Length: 155
Image (cartoon, helix red, strand yellow):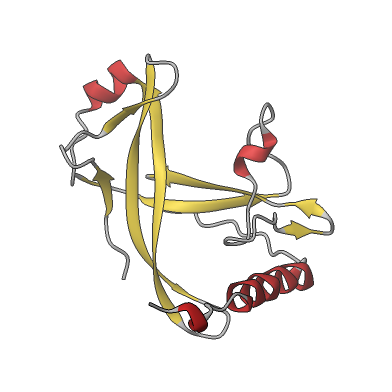
């Protein structure tokens, strides 16, 4: 049901992206996973993860566009930040609302990780700020339908 993990390249086939410090970079990986939701509905979702390292080590690893890798991409969620220096970096944001998902008032942090460990699984944390998110989605929906074009001035 799941596709193999693949190395993603740009239009020219380059796979190593440099960070703000040119000595370091990353390679982007993708995998399409079949996920069955709480209502029993199957959806195919594309997951992505980054393999980070020095540019020299990434080059030496020999990554190339379209390459398949063993392993999988897992989603880890936590009430503790993954990055202590910049906790906002991994906030789990609800769609286009810009609102962080929370549990008991605490923000949920989310990270995608590539692993070759067969026994490693997703670690979800359920959010409980459902009413806040529904209100934000409803407000966005009503704002998008509130502005109607004026047909009196059509040319």
